[in-house]
Structure formats: C-alpha cells, structure tokens
Amino acid sequence: MTHLVIGAGAVGRHIAELLASEGKQVTVATRSGADTGLAGVDHIALDASDADALSAKADGAEVIYNCANPADYTTWATFWPPLAKSFLTAAERTGAVYAITGNLYPYGPVSEPMREDMPDAATDHKGRLRALMWADAKALHDAGRIRTVEVRGSDYVGTGVGDNGHVTRQIPGALKGKRAMVIGRKDQPHVFTDVLDVARLMVAAAADESALGRTWHVPSNPPRTQEQAINDVLASIGKPPVKVSAIPGPIFASASLVVPLVRELRQLSYQWTKPYLLDDSAARAHFGMEPTPWDEVCRRSAVV
Image (cartoon, rainbow, N blue to C red):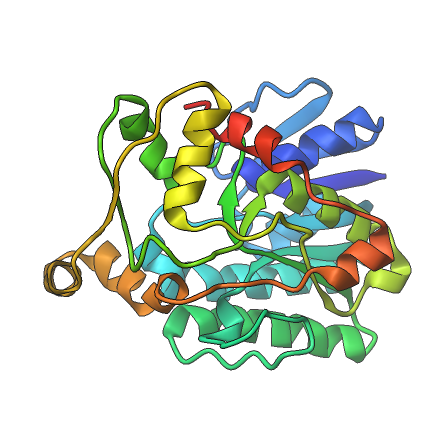
C-alpha cells in the first residue's frame, strides 16, 4: 500500500526517505510536483486543499502524512483551515491513517515541562488554530470516523531546516564569524527537536494502532540555551564560537508594527523569555525511542 506524504520540507523528506529505505511505496505530493531526488520515491503535483483531488490520490493509501507548511509564516489563517478540512475528508473517505506533524503552539505559555495531558490553552491565533486542527481530528477519531495521530516537537534543528529554524537560520552568518541575534533571551534553557526524530516518530506512530487517537511528544535532547545551541553547532564542525546577543525588546516591538513576520513572531516570543521544556517520557517508553545524539544533530545542522 502507498504512503502519501504531503509536503517536501525537512520532515516530509525524512519521512519519505525512511519509508523508502524500508521498501515501502512512497509518493510525495507538493503543489509543484518537484522531484526531491530521493531514490525509490514517486512525486506528484497536487493541491491538497482540494478534498476530491486529495481523496483520489489517497485512495488505497495506508497513511496520509500531513507535513505541509506554508511558505509564508503570516498566511496560516487562510492556508490551514481549508487544508485541514481536506485532510479530514480524505482520511474519512479512504480509511487511511491520518498522521499530523504538529507543534507545541497549542499549549500556549506554560511554567513547567509540557506533557501530552496538558490542555491546549493557547491564546495567540496560531496556537488556537493548531489546537482546533487537532481537536477536530480527535473528535472524528473518537467518533470512529477516522484514525489519526499527532506528533509534536519543539523548535527544529537538523538536516534541511535552514531558515525555518531559530538556530539554523543563524548558522550561515555564524560560520563567517558574525554575531548571532536571537529573539527573547539567549540564556534560557530551551528544548530543540531533530527533524529526523520527528520523522522517526511519525512513521512509528502511524504504524501502531495502539498509538492512535492522541498526541505524542518527540524524544528530544536535553535543553540548551540559544547561545549554547548556536555555538554547539559551530563546535561540532571545529568552528570557533561567536557572540550571541538578544534583539532589544523595544526594537523588536517597533519592528512588529511594520513587519508582518516580526508581528507573528512577537506573539510567540514567550517561548524564548523563560525555560521552554518538554516531557517526552511517554513516547520514549511506548516506542522505545531515544533522540539522535546531540553532537550528530549539531553536525547535520551545520550543513547550509
């Protein structure tokens, strides 16, 4: 049976590669149908927000993996609702497991390590949107209409993350010895998640009937501050550390008034002003999964 991967970003590519290495039949769907270059993987052009088109391509699929991600961070309000609805329709029509690449936004600001049994209590619009997407999927699962699972990781590091990661977007400049400028505070412990580990858990959870109907946190390495993480990446390939500074609050606030992306990031800046920690013990116990060693993650994050 086919595994249909929607999206060819870092997570989607890793999922496709893992499945192909296991001899699975894999199709990666993007709007353009661009070839990822992955051996043994088929590629198609598809507007996944078209429920009829997605259902047709998913007919006979074992799993539909939602690895979609809008190119423009400011367009979530228009990008996600029709796409999320299309995924639910296709999952119900085809019977395929619906595996969702989630994140930690739904929890909102918290004062302790995030656990899967915490309420989705976000107040910002991105967090509420992601929380609603999972609530809708969970409701259909509980009604017996679909089978679904959501995997949640923290900020991404690893191969292919590039400008989509708070740490990895700093690396090209840091490799040239330039000072890194980060959001919030540079000295607060923060969990970072390897995109390869996200993919590993997505594949494992989608294949495990006992894992469905809930969220799972990706096993991740112990927290590092932004300053530590950036310089850990440099050290992993023998490069000297750079100075790391936090963007001054008034400058960040002023920029948010005129730059839409900064305005979106400011709503989530709470993630970078105090410890941002993740309890991943449930997934470690259920799947017997440990995170990829931090040194290896850093070496892969250094590739730009």
